[in-house]
Amino acid sequence: MRTPLFLIILFTYGTITAQNYDYGVNMPLEDYNFVLGTNCFPTKYQFSEDSKLIEQAKQARALGSNIFKTSISDRYLQDYGYKKADVKNIMDVFNLIPDYGKIFEMDFRYYLFWVHTATGINWKQGINEKQEKRLYSEMYDFASYLLKNYDNSGKTFMIGNWEGDWLLHGQGGRDTTPSKEHVDNMTKWFQIRSQAINDAKKNIKHSNVSLYYYIEVNLVVKGMEGKTCITKDILPNVDVDLVSYSSYESSKKKDYQTNKESLTKVLNYIEGQLKPKEGLPFKRRVFIGEYGGHAFDDRPETQLRQFDNAKDIMRISLEEDLPFTLYWQLYNNEYTDDGKSKNMSLINEKGQKRPMFYLHQNFYKQINDYLKEYKTEHNTYPVHEDFKVQALEILENVYNKIRPEIVATLN
Image 1 (cartoon, rainbow, N blue to C red):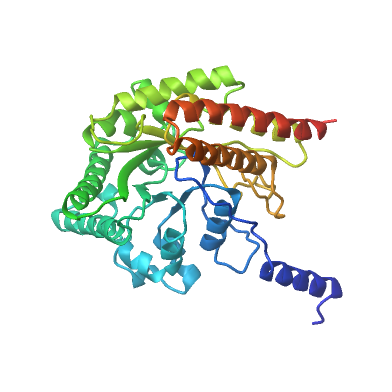
Image 2: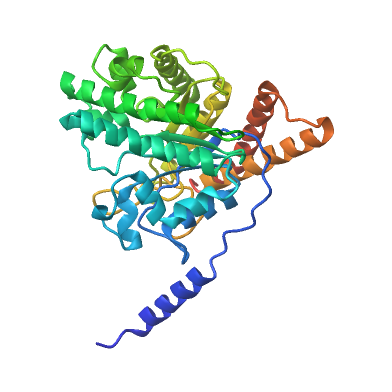
């Protein structure tokens, strides 16, 4: 069959574009927590000849972020020519996918990643003594690897999980009540992971590299209503460092004030369930692992609502001294049943950088310039309160410059 000329042209253009993809210039980043970041999980589309993992890492770095969040999972093995049967644990996955090591050698300061297990063990079915040893060894070995290999790197690694309440309830099972057996089994799984990481930190000699364990939750309001969920029934029984809140149930309200009231209640409740823990470098032990909203190309008003909401959550996060707040996500992975993009992205399927991209990029550039100038003048970085004041001012200014361009599309 003859290939139509326009398809040849399209294919050629796409190949040339991929070969010459320009990520932009990476500005040197100051050694400071910018707080605001994004999620970088591979999706169906990409624009370069790099792997999906590397492309997202390069995009995040060119954006100006010093925070990188993804997952380390045996789900990605097929992209590299391997099968799940080729691995027995997470270290096998890490070793077979060299891109993880390449990303860890990049100059991000903070790495957050979902790590479940590559042992094939299903905690919901119970964890016997032999399985407990395998799960412990898997996490201990991975934690030890990070502490040894990135000793004196200045990097911070944070190991966690995907939205834990969906794991416990079943995805979308908001109205179900998890069994006591499943609650107990998940508690044991979390305890094994926490103990392995804590033991590695005690046993492995290291300096100027940090490692923390976090649990991600997403149905916290249930706990506040006295219903079964991770926050109410599991967090008090696990020695966890931090909690990530996938915040959609509380961060998509109509305005700033309503979001502020909703989020602060939930965040305070989460922290109230935690076991005390000394020596953590963050002012708060809870952060926002996901936030964002849908926007549609044929409904411009949704673009404005998404932009305004995101700015409100960023503002609240800085005001509330959260250690991280991560937008979902760099590339979109949400679509309607008829295939329309929900535009939960900084860069869309056409490679266009959306207003949310520029909100982040301009914030990073200006906060980085401020930190650089401050350190040059004072020979040290600002204390957190001074950083917060400046970050809020920069966020407001950047938002006010970009918003009129979105408003103009409504007319």
